[in-house]
Length: 176
Image (cartoon, rainbow, N blue to C red):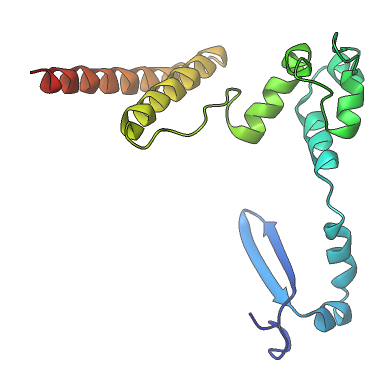
């Protein structure tokens, strides 16, 4: 891709900006980026640290002062939640259990769910996919009820019932 400013050199600096829900991108060469004062911003972005990003996300999803202070400690490795917030790294497998209250919103935000599902086997992919869809709908229904979004909950209930009817009909067709 050529530089969008000079049109001569290869674009090596790429910027994406979202403003008022509209995304714009600019692709420029290093020389044009320096001339326009864009190079310093790109160099700062190159120093991206995943642990810092996770710690930032943890801060954004914690709601009470106790969660932010981080007095919770893993009984196995002794890691404090506040130390996890600082590094973005857990100390052992038991940390997931010890910090489950604090990690659930973070995991849901990052992965869209709090359970690892893995890949679906190729020969039964459709059945597994349908099962996952049902589980996702049940989880979403539970969250809607918790948030007292009863109209959305009713829609989800109806969708679940439709899928269950289709499954029963399919099972009758497959029986000899």
